Amino acid sequence: MSKEEISLFDDQKFETDHKKFELKAIGDDSHLIKSKDRVQHHGEVFTPKWMVEKMLSEPAIQEKLHDLHATFFEPSAGEGAFLKGILHQKLSYVDQISNKITWKNNALWALMSIYAIELLQDNLIKAKRAMIDVFINHYQAFMQKALSSNTDLYKSARYIIDVNIVQGNTLTFKNSENKLIEFREWIPSGNKVKQNTFTYKSLFNNDDMYDVNANEGQLSLFGDFENSDSKQNQPVQLTKVYEV
Image 1 (tube, rainbow, N blue to C red):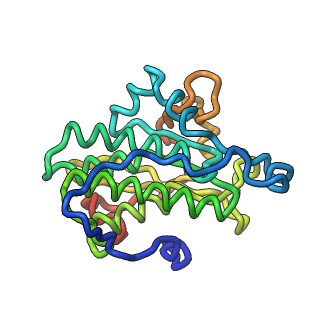
Image 2: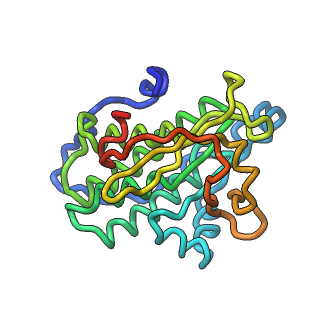
């Protein structure tokens, strides 16, 4: 992970004066259209909160939201409206099924299941920020204590977001550095996880992969990555993935 990627996040301790942490509702802080120029050049519009909630309420989607390993892909993340909605609902399920011992691993599996690409760098930063905020919010409400940026959990969550939510052009399969867009596949290995690196382009050799804008089911699963360009890593603890 590059120094630039790390700097996208504010390394504060996320402390609060309140003794009791409460789960906050997902905000709707974006306008439908950012500017005429961005609409003309990028076709950029925003999805309001009510539309996100409606799409995520579909029974088939709800079933996947209650599966820690069911993967979601957003090919045009914007400022993260869908990403934070998906993560919020997945972590709400984690809150229901976990105790204070199992919550961390379950929450990281939920985070590992969400992938996205965004063309514009300013949107990418906001989308990543939105996701880490949702993660912190759920942790603090569940554990009733602040999440320090010095913890393995925070560092792993931030790392996962950095490698799963990436800059790129879905039409060219490349990022701003003219390199193929890459993701991580997270493979359970007992109580640990292994990482495979694969390219976005390789997914189009897989008939099981479809995206958030597909006609059948708004949010969907990746298939198996048997034909992907991959690099096998040794199994590590989920809370130590940032050390790889």
